[in-house]
Length: 128
Image 1 (cartoon, rainbow, N blue to C red):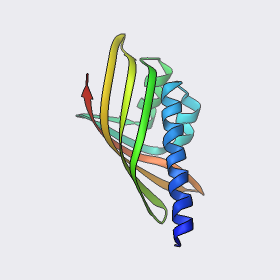
Image 2 (image 1 turned 45 degrees about the horizontal axis):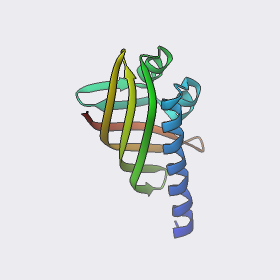
Image 3 (image 1 turned 30 degrees about the vertical axis):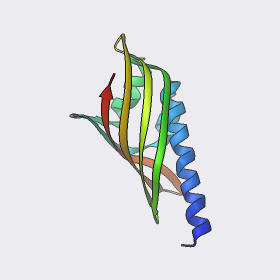
Image 4 (image 1 turned 45 degrees about the vertical axis):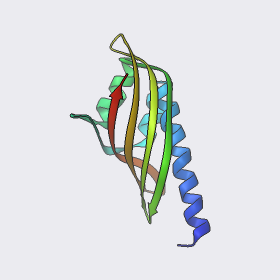
């Protein structure tokens, strides 16, 4: 794989990171459905979430974000897989409570049927 192709894929992954932010901010369950693989799994602290659980949390508006910004610091592409390490900030309401958080995250994307999908995510969150 040449450097130009790797750079193109890195830019595509960074664009997906922006789509992830947008989908979470807008509670856009259709966009989340497109971004997440069917077997998506996330760990946040000691909690584990599936694709269905993430979408339901947003559909129920249990989560209502006013701001959400991911900053990918490293993107590594390995053929049909990509690993992103970064940090994020968020502010909004969760179960009626005002929340602010900073997190460090790792996300794994895999190319499935010519489309990148988020297959796994892990975050360490500091609530403020």
